[in-house]
Length: 170
Image 1 (cartoon, helix red, strand yellow):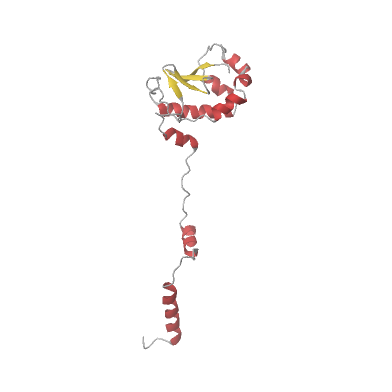
Image 2 (cartoon, rainbow, N blue to C red):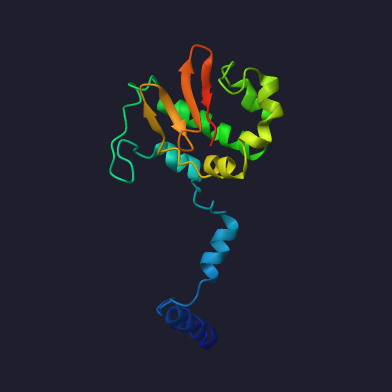
């Protein structure tokens, strides 16, 4: 230390003194690191994903639904993903997509043409809202299949895939 100049000693003293100060208010170092190593935002889980993963053996009202197996569904997750697509079709009024999953003839709609000609009456604002707000972890089911919108639409797993087996009037 004998050979150090007074200026160098002053710089060393200042550096040691600065290093011993708390850095609670100084976030510039953290910001510099974030710029060098980008931090990905935490993954967002959309509502469908959360509902797909939610336990659905007891409903909000405390009732216990029929098991998926008893309703004929061997893969509830796959059916819920199908319903998520169905919700999008309804929201976007994709009549052809919806008609493609209907098992015709239905009681009120014997053909795809009949269904499409009455689409706006069937999927009125009330039914569209019910489909849009459908919780994928709260699907009613019984030995006849699964229903949504208070029984307006019934689904069943068939050899050709999931199909709408009934559309009931309001």
